Image (cartoon, rainbow, N blue to C red):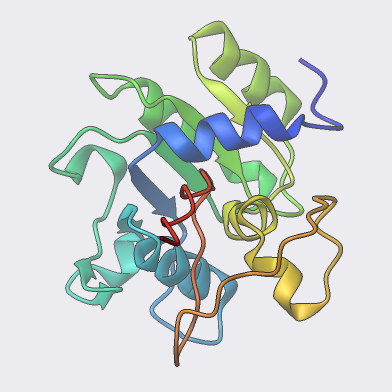
Length: 182
């Protein structure tokens, strides 16, 4: 697969079918990107499992930290890697040792490891590199467009106002039928 560009349908399929996400390299520090990515995904209904052996005993988004992927008590759909490229092969080794196998190996922004991508794909995993699931979810759902970012998704419809607080959209924006006006 060409990992220089991903079709929206490929990313949407991954984000629509994955429910459990292990965030390898997660941090309890709210100033770190791994913290707010895990929190954001958790708020969108994903089960997020933070993985960081130095943080076991702490929590992130209401979930306890785990020391390694094998410690997560449920099957993992996606392994989201917040580690330097040099660590990707060992994270992939952990992922490939799981039963059942995860569906996706996702490498965060700035993280590429082509050899690991080829190994993961050979084992049947989908791979995304140098992307962020938080950004992709926001872009595909239309949420990111509220801040003036070009989402590459055109629509003549304005987002519904849901009231006060943060508004959230889903990836499957099926329009509701109009109410009868009789």
